[in-house]
Image (tube, rainbow over all chains, first blue to last red; front, side, top):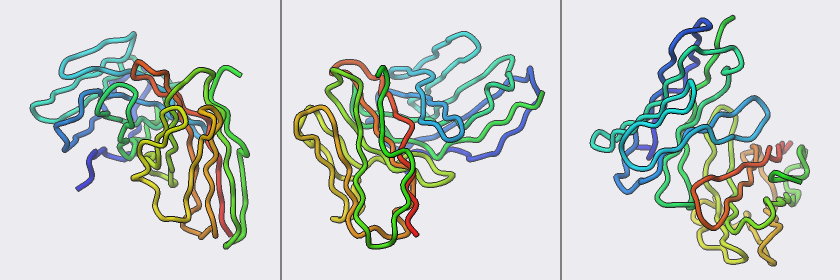
Amino acid sequence: QKEVEQDPGPLSVPEGAIVSLNCTYSNSAFQYFMWYRQYSRKGPELLMYTYSSGNKEDGRFTAQVDKSSKYISLFIRDSQPSDSATYLCAPGYSSASKIIFGSGTRLSIRP
Amino acid sequence: GAGVSQSPRYKVAKRGQDVALRCDPISGHVSLFWYQQALGQGPEFLTYFQNEAQLDKSGLPSDRFFAERPEGSVSTLKIQRTQQEDSAVYLCASSPSQGNTIYFGEGSWLTVV
């Protein structure tokens, strides 16, 4: 079993829709939970991070972590074509230590 | 530059050839990471440096892979006797001593033919 499981998609939704992206993980030692966005032929860029369980909101993006069920979610409201990218969940053990990536979900927003 | 810089961006190597991939981290960043990303997959951890010390090399797939960061800034990932399965994007990332933001470069695309 992989440490981080993520549905690879692809996921295609119309512009303006709410998008839900999810991951599960197996290692209860993870404390930090990141979401990275990766455009084609580019490196991953950090979108959001949360520490331990709870919600964090940043503009149209909301990250949720439920450590009891080892479940990570990213919600995108009012999705835009520019949100079309691969989204990678990435839990980590501690500050500035290595992070483990999911396989990524490819998201396409149709105009 | 302001970001993590990697070179070459693209490399085609003949099977059996040695390659060296360079990473210039963000100035002052203590931690440096190398990841390997196969097509359609998420990045896989290779190795981690804190300054010049290689603290974790558990992800290096074989003894053909070697990484160094002799002066605690620039790092080189070397792959000896390349094989077709080494074809991937090699991503370098750096982070400051404190905090949990890891910044990635755009990667070096290696194709072994």
